[in-house]
Length: 78
Image 1 (cartoon, rainbow, N blue to C red):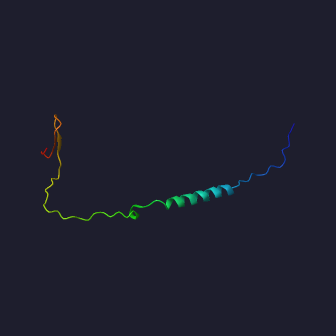
Image 2: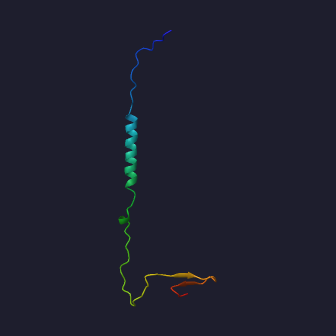
Image 3: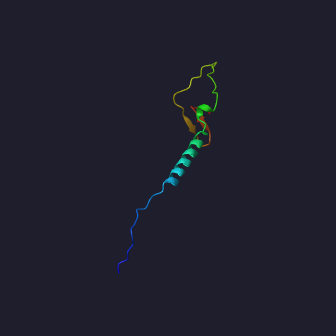
């Protein structure tokens, strides 16, 4: 027994709700992105250079030693 199904129409895809969601997400991300303050907009003033009275001789290499008794030495100075 053969069942007749009639004429089948192609299904339509309704994208209007998809377009609405994409628009709402776009507006949301645009609104959130404007609230992020960049580092240059914070208004932090860094200290300027200071002149040092005495010259300090710093070696290129720093040596830290920790002895068995717990004493800490930096460049042979405790």
